Image (cartoon, rainbow, N blue to C red; front, side, top):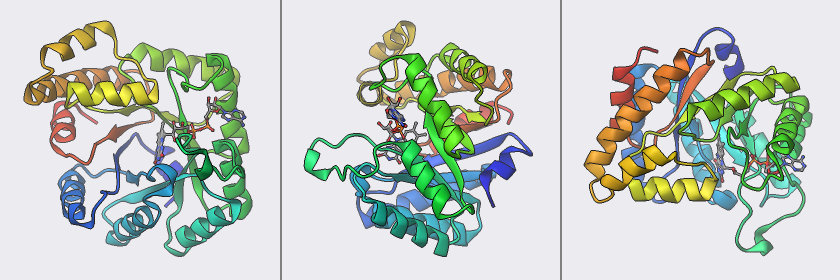
Length: 284
Ligand SMILES: Cc1cc2nc3c(=O)[nH]c(=O)nc-3n(C[C@H](O)[C@H](O)[C@H](O)COP(=O)(O)OP(=O)(O)OC[C@H]3O[C@@H](n4cnc5c(N)ncnc54)[C@H](O)[C@@H]3O)c2cc1C
């Protein structure tokens, strides 16, 4: 089923997973998916490793989960290191596997410029390719409450976010963020600019101070000072950070739910504990 049809009917709950680097870790991922299925997610999504490194695995896990009928599936697809013909091959494989939902992404610029195919430059181009290939896919795209780190300005980034909608994106999922006011102000500006498709906020429950600092450095999201101070206190104690992360994510989601969001997407980090505890704390 196309996810947009679910979003149009109800507030969605969804989880993001990444394909493990080794086959042996696949068991852990399957256990996490099965653990979280008790919450009846509306869909789960599987990331696409930088530069297409998980090309086969993303497709395989997406296929298996779709076949299991536990929930709807969305596959991530990045384009910056692929040629147009490679993307068409992938789309054909997804179509054969009845995967109806794709989140169309550019991907991060690879360190080695030889890996760049220089054929598809932006997510907007990928959305266009998918649309031209088939109207059967529901297409999601990324958006950035604090703007994408490469953007010239917030307005410039918003303009390209709108272009994703014009090219055919059906809904957005946000980058992680820790200050809800960033999300609210982004959404307000997006609506003013004419963005009408749903914007689903995505939340990552923090489980380690060092890890979240690394992630936010990479993706350009900020950690508010007050939160950063708290995280510093438990820098050597992941258990304490995890407990605090659950409290913080619960507070964040409760406020979002009171402010008319179309659903919640969890960056699960392939672990079920924090997501489970947050979901037990809130009422979605
Ligand atoms: C929900 C979500 C899921 C993600 N999943 C993955 C994943 O599975 N695998 C992975 O490797 N990465 C993933 N990422 C990270 C993503 O690949 C990076 O953030 C990447 O740097 C940008 O991808 P994008 O699709 O937003 O790119 P784009 O939309 O192309 O944006 C990149 C930059 O270019 C600008 N821009 C956009 N369109 C145009 C245009 N037409 N002309 C000129 N400039 C333009 C934007 O303002 C921005 O500054 C995900 C991010 C999010 C938020």
